[in-house]
Amino acid sequence: MFSSKRLLGRRSYRYSVRFICCSFFLTAACLTLFSVIHFIYTAPGAANAYLYRLQIHMAMANREAVIIHPVDVKNYIPSDFHVYKNETCPERFPEMVGPVDVNMTEISLKQVESELKHPITFGGSWKPDDCIPKWRVAFLIPFRNRHQHVPILLRHIFPHLFKQHVEFGIFVVNQEGDFPFNRAMLLNIGFVEIQKLKKDYYDCFIFHDVDHIPENDRIYYGCKDMPKHFAEQLDIHLYRLEYDDFFGGVSGVMTDQFEKVNGFCNQFWGWGGEDDDFYARIKHHGYNISRPPNNYGRYQAIVKHHTQEAQFLGRFSLLHDSVERSKTDGLNSLVYSKPTITYEPFFTNISVMIKPPME
Image (cartoon, rainbow, N blue to C red):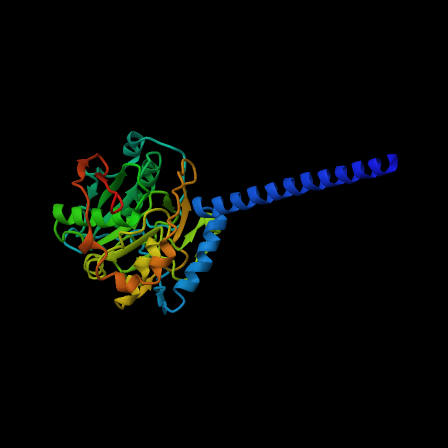
C-alpha cells in the first residue's frame, strides 16, 4: 500500500512537471509568435521591408519594367567657364564636384540661414540671376512630426540647387491629426494647392522624403529624363536598389505626366505601397523610368527622431488592381478640408487635416 501511494505521488509529480514545462513552452511560443507578428505588421524595419519586397515582386511580376540609366559625360565644365545672363543655364557647372560631405548634426533654421550663399525668397523660392533657368522645379516634402529633419534636409539641398542653377520652390505638406499617415494623399493635395497658387508655373514636381539626404551634387534636380527615380541607393539598404520597380524616397515627374496618371492613389493609410502603386500608373501610361548615372543617386537616411508609422495592411490587395483604380482614384477623387497655408523663410507650409472615408 505504501509503495502504491509513493508510486502515485511520483506519477503526479511527473505529470505536474510536464504540465508546467508544456505550459511554459506554449506560453513562450505564443509570445514569440505574437512579437514576430507585431514587428512585421507595425514596424517598417528590416524584416518588414524584406517581406514586403518579396510580396511586391509577386504582385508586380507581370509589369515589364524599362529602366533608363542616362549616359553621363564624365568631364564637367572647365573651372574658367562663364555663362551670360541672356543664355539658358546649362545642366553642368564647374562647382558640381560630385561627392559631398553629409552632416547629420541637428541644426536650427537660423543656422541654415547663416550658411546660405544666396538669399532665399520668403516662402522658399529662388532662381539664378546669372543665367536663364532651364527648369522650374517644385519640391514637395510630405511631413508629420519630423521637425528636426527639415533643417538638415534644407542645409544639404540648398547648396545642390544653387550649384545647378535650378529655379525652385520648396513646399512642406504637413498632415495634422492622429489618423494614419497618408503620404500619397499629401502629395496630391500639395500638387493641387500649388497649382492654385501658381497655375502651370512649375515644369516638374519632385517628391522628396524629409529624411533622405543626397550625397552627390551631380544628381541633377532639373526636369530632365522624367519620370525619374533619384534615390536609387540608400545607406540603410547598403546602397543597393531595394527592387527593380522601386520608385520611393525621392522621385519626380513632369507636371503634365502627374495629371495624366491622375496622381497618387488616396487609399494608402499607413506605411508602404503608395510608391509601387504610383509606379504601376506610370508604366501603364507608357512612361519609362530613368535613374541617375554613375552612382549619383546615393542618399543617406536620417535615423534619429525617426517616428515609425504603422503599416497599411491592405496595400497588397490594392496593388493588384492599381491600373483599373487609377481612373477613378487620385487627383479626380481628392476630398480634404481647406488647408492652412503659411509662408516661412525657407518654405511654404501647407497644413491639412485628412481622414479616411466614413470616419
